[in-house]
Amino acid sequence: SNNEITVEGAAKYHSEFEEGNYSVAKRCYIDLRMLKDTAGSVSYWLILTYVADEWLTIEKGRSLELAVDLNSMVLTADSDLSREKDPSGKWITEILEYPVTSEQLWKMIRADAILVNVTGREGEMSGYFNETNFANFRKFAGEYMDAPVAN
Image (cartoon, rainbow, N blue to C red; front, side, top):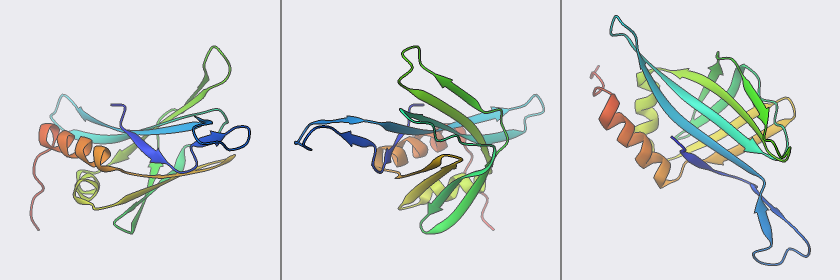
């Protein structure tokens, strides 16, 4: 959990753009979840959490695109959307869940680069995975996933 990806343009500058005179205006987390039902069937999910000072208004459907080593993977959210403001009214949070197959996860785990694009009614957010993100995904695979079956 708390697998924060690097977001392009996440910092907002103030005053005269002096060095160090900025604040983070948006964050994005992509976490993994595994669910095992009583019959032993396993399913995997990417949990997208977007936190910012402005709404992106992400919707169900094809709102998350990943470029995994330049191969596009468009994911469809089918969960109930969670949107809320913090008590101060400054920060909003949007959360969606995207089902993924084990094959899609293995592609992500073995990738050299993953670019992320989230589309909402009020804009888009772009970012990318860093080494910590890849390490977190590989750790998840080691703990919760069986090795893929060779074709």
